[in-house]
Image 1 (cartoon, rainbow, N blue to C red):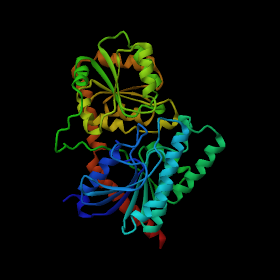
Image 2 (cartoon, helix red, strand yellow):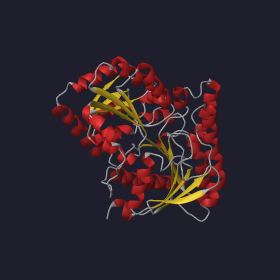
Image 3 (cartoon, one colour):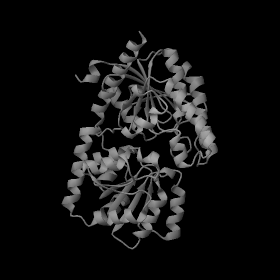
Length: 422
């Protein structure tokens, strides 16, 4: 019997994003349930990253369903993200808060929970419905912080007005004040979060992924894609293709590598900048830039297996230097060499693990040079990098162990909070 099964807990996961959207919280929920805990998910209607409500779901009304047969999922209406633009994003964020405040208490009226955990990439406002639920359920509230607010809003250019950023900062401070535990995905998050919250609440808890063997082999990668990957030196980027990922740098890198017919830059994913990338591919006649679209997380290991090098990139902003993109853990687990076009915590992990190398962000010349350098390495050296990365992953990020650690963190934090109350 493992540690999680010995002490089953009742957990409510509040998240604006959940399966069938591709986020690490999906694996976290599944493994919590596998380890014997009672898990309920309160979320919205899936619409990320394309911006439209997924087939099988309706924008209006509440819906309930099962995830992996043993997790009940409650969904509330929200405004879809659309194809971009600040208006749609603001409405998307606000609608989840409003719907959560109105519907979650009713949907969960007969449920009691030991812990409420909020999975919190942007927006941090999704914590607000959980604050009400904490008060109603008398539960310990923890937030797993994936993005720093208001810093990430400034870095992406979503909010530029200094007064508005200060106002959002005050909101963040109030939100954090109502939480019992603040889990941060990067050690570099500790100081920025401490500007808005008491330091004793803050605990480093990194992102992780599940690499257990699936019960069934999932086939979802087109044969023409695997053949293309196998026939070239394939550098694969996987994930959201938006403003934060410095897609302009990736495009300029493809232009620099245009006359290297053996190299392919493959950008797998969706996002707000995909259409722009397609148009620029045509303008510059980039046969070496491949945009195959978005695939489910279940088939990504197959794509990684056919790749030579995996690529992660972010814009050159201080906030992103503090962030560890969750794709880094997936890349490490895949056992492939990694090129990191970023600095800070993400670059440190890539180099410290021995899995690859890093260059300054938003530097196409440096990135193109790294790709060529990787291509010229012996196959045995590339394999050694991949094996080093996989070993580092299992030591630091394997999800089953991390989930057990999460439960122990929450139990310890609750005990400490209760002792302070007396």
